[in-house]
Length: 602
Image (cartoon, rainbow, N blue to C red; front, side, top):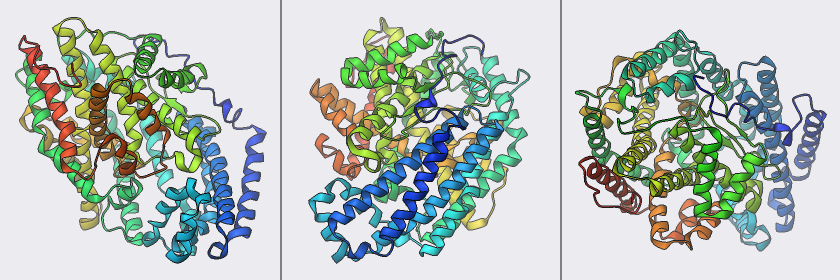
């Protein structure tokens, strides 16, 4: 780190889960879970079609308890690994747990299969019984997977070998990325990428070259990992009879494929918005040509300075409190309870996340905080996830607290919007407002347009793998550049270095098809925020109730209270028009006028 941010000592306290990897409670819990799984199997295997609703309630309650205890162990194993991914002991502990967990999964798989296969005449009376109401949606969702289930012996085999499957390849990916030393200074991924935000063009060029060189040194491994995961998904989808590579993700997200297609088409139809912005940015920077390494360059009017950890914390909590003191109170728990890991350190995985853990504990947030403006927004984003997970867990319990990825991004993006609006309201002068608007627009472009371009990359590489076989790194690069050029056209010149920047994006591996959820969440939040701007204080309780609802119902149902209809093609255009309004306002500020204020950027 060039300068200390104050985040160096912000280390999470995992003792809320277990003292350490040698904690005797770990072995005790593994033994307890093993015993519960054996009893559960003896009690319910082959008997679901003959039990009463009250007995079924006992079954699903026991099932939930087993998975909650297992997830507590899983969270501890992964969180312990995430900040020391090249520590042999941490890696071995994670692998050991994955192997134990696969055994539990193997012995529980019968429940999902038997429940999904029950005839409607048997299942429907159970679903209709009031005693099952809490679990009704969860159980309905399980039944939707019936066409994609295999025979029990096959499902058990897949569970048995899962420790050496996708999870193992993802762990290898994280180890490789965290071990790369970028440039002569041997910097981390987070450190070198932060230089792309430097006002000095030579520093940006060097950062892009260092990052490309570092990725290139491991490209043969990264290419193999990507191809392996593409092939695994191809085989799994074929076995489970999913018609398209994205079908399983859409089913998980409880979103109709027509809705996703409408989202993708709507965003692509407005690629002119980022293209217009980057032409504006080229003019504001005084450049003849804008290259990929210039994309995040601060404007000359920007006053990018170190934002110490405590100041970033204050900004986020203040913005949350202005919206809802209750929301701020939950967010404050993360700081006071040491539920956050913030410093940039060697061997820590890049990026940021919020792990929901379990309702009987609390979520944990990981960021890599170096003190720039986007780190404050990232903190707001992950705390949004954390608040969402905390409220849903406390209100809904373990099974119903898990939201589809599309809804999971709602609170995180809303948290970013609260911070942006708070800063904009306090901004003095046209230049400061223009700087904030441009920063926000770039974040929105990264969340909406870039994610849809990445979705198009995913779509192409999955289909290419299925039609022609293994992809070379060169072909990956061609597809990557092609989908990026479609987004930027002549507004940004993409260099040869940019060809391999697909190879560090973990979402492609961890959750194929995930990325459209970001665009979904951003456009949804823009519409929600517009309603907040129009409605005022009465909006906050309804919004917090939405978060506390977790996954107790499908997204379309949960959003009815806000008058949002996801199957309306015009809905996506509403969010895109708001982005267009923000850009028009930025264009107005840049030409010396205030422009027309929209519902977001006023």
